[in-house]
Image (cartoon, rainbow, N blue to C red; front, side):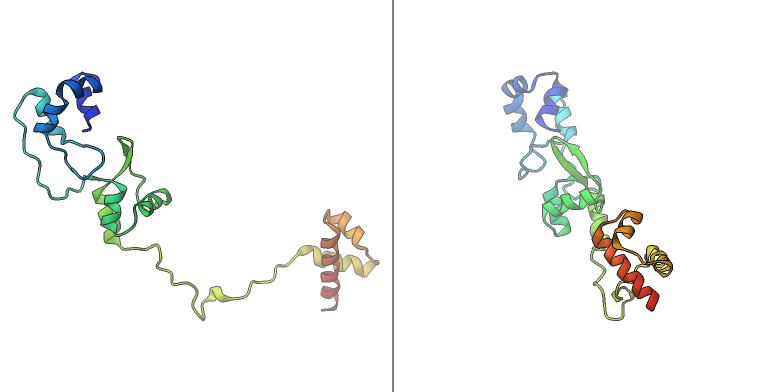
Length: 186
């Protein structure tokens, strides 16, 4: 919980809660991660303090699969930069994450499963010699060429007639006519 959540659970505006109860609360209930920029408190401890009950001890410090990780923590776990974590989430390589407290968080189990699956994004080593993808591009068959060749056999043609009939530019008409002549001889 954030201090805003705790103030709301107390039924007070945040500034009033901070002025009346903030110092006492911070002295008794410790933040979950003191290195984090956002102060987050354990919900059970915070609610016990609000109710005036004894404050329970924090759960074991070991990682839990449902822990929410920031991009920095997820990046450290995956061995990548935090910006790469955000990029992975936007491309679907990681789940989108959950927006809470103005930040995006990823569940530990999702990050762990991504790490354990290995990096499958760069499995392709590229084209190798003998790879069928290394062929030269296939020539495209333009159906207009055979039509123009047949038409040219019957009567002489000009590029203007071809441009008008196929609604193409003069330069394209010249190319089509040249291809049709080559088609007729070949």
